[in-house]
Length: 83
Figure 1: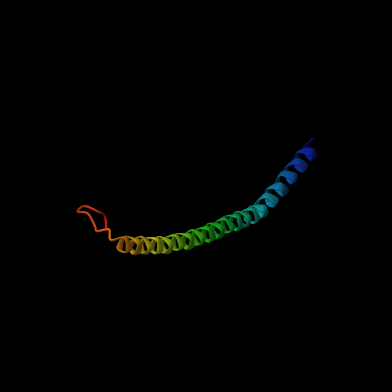
Figure 2 (figure 1 turned 90 degrees about the vertical axis):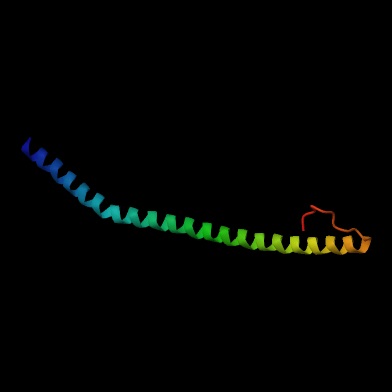
């Protein structure tokens, strides 16, 4: 009976050591996973910034073309029109 209790205690002690050694490994995996998510978010933000810049450039072109057409057609600004 005493021998069995010692075996169980030894196994528990070994499992605790293994669990303690595994904790930094799990922590490292979690850091790697979070870093990968961070890199993916940074890439997405870069793509969104590029898309917004492209859309703004297109808007400038459209406004210029509309102004060109307005002048060509002789349309004058009405009071209260947005610039």
